Image (tube, rainbow, N blue to C red; front, top):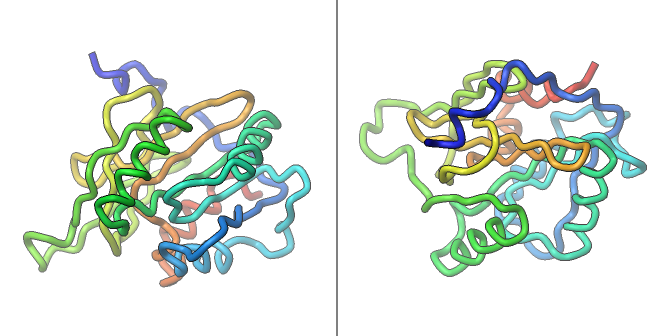
Length: 202
């Protein structure tokens, strides 16, 4: 039986309150620089900071170095929400294999090959349907990385493909997004902004 069917409905688990947020810097060129900029433009600047942040975001990542993983582990241990956004849809084949291996070995997250939602009927605009922390429908600007069957609550769908996962780790919450939200934030998408601020900003 699929592990998805045994999870508590995502909408029944409230988001944690956010006091401080941080975009985790990853060395080297960014896969989607507009994703990083999108989060930074949408989040309240007055709550930015790295001292015991309660929301840690890693935008459009392929792999995370050891010191970054340590910061993520510390954040989860302290009860923070950590959002990791996949940049795998924009990686070459060899880089995607590395991305997939990293997610499996370090985060126990299994992903499938990227899917271009814009292929097929070009007249139909693809959307991502989020179910947690509240319902939202966000236009997708990109390729998505679907999830395999695994432990955790599915919180986002691209049609019938699961592309968002929430999992409780330590005292915190790990959120994985297989569809980059940052570009929608950068474009000023109101639903994307509402979903992000619904992570616990009061």
